[in-house]
Amino acid sequence: MFAGFITKTAPEEPMMGEAEADLDGAAIASLEPGTMQVLLPGEDVKFSSPADVGGGYEAFQYRTLLAVSASLGLPYHLVTGDVRQANYSSLRAELVEFRRRVQQLQHGVIAHQLCRPVWARWLETAQLAGRLDLSDPAAARPVQWIPPRWDWVDPLKDIQAQVLAMEAGITSRRKVVEATGYDIEEVDRENAADAARATGLGLRYRTSPGETQGARATPATRPDPGAGAGNDTDDGAAATDPATEQE
Image 1 (tube, one colour):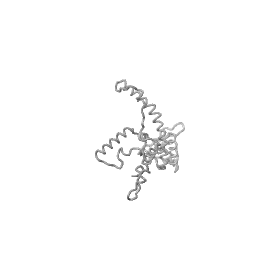
Image 2 (image 1 turned 90 degrees about the vertical axis):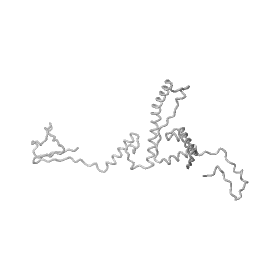
Image 3 (image 1 turned 180 degrees about the horizontal axis):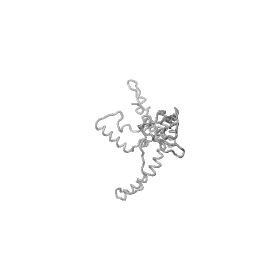
Image 4 (image 1 turned 135 degrees about the vertical axis):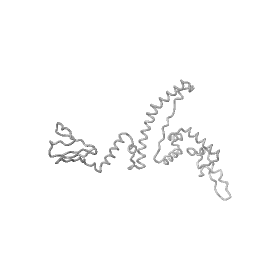
């Protein structure tokens, strides 16, 4: 859209296509695509040329979108898709705060206010319809809601941190599996089925299913180092503690 202004030396002479003048004496002439307008002597057409926004428009737009993202509680790169000024640390910091807010909505709104009433109504309807035979309906109401998993920027570091947390006893394998959006009982059944199938087919992998699941277990009883102190071997090699032997 642009506007043109007609200047002429004789204002009383109407221009071709010019409408009637308003109370202020200003008239508007229409301009259509492909029109060749013939001007009278002394008339000229000048189009408006607004000033350019300059080189600071991109910075202004960036700050405006930052304010919009902050007001919505969303990361800037999720709103705009612009990751030019982002790095691993900034993306992870934004995602941690954003996912904490989403988890509040998942557990406080969706699970508590939507899923729980639906589950209670379904359980009651199924029992009244004779689909379920429950001796204690109240005992069947407690359930665990598992939201979809989150994908991190660097999943390798995240998995390594989870393994270290399990080995240190900070968290349990159940919580780690549930954080991925799966049920631990279903995962265990799949691991057992995979292990049985691999054994039946004679397959051997670097880590067989069911062989090293979860944190490394510490043996309940450790051999006494002094028990074999007097048993010298022929070549003078010392006995190796099986609990400390590394693969």
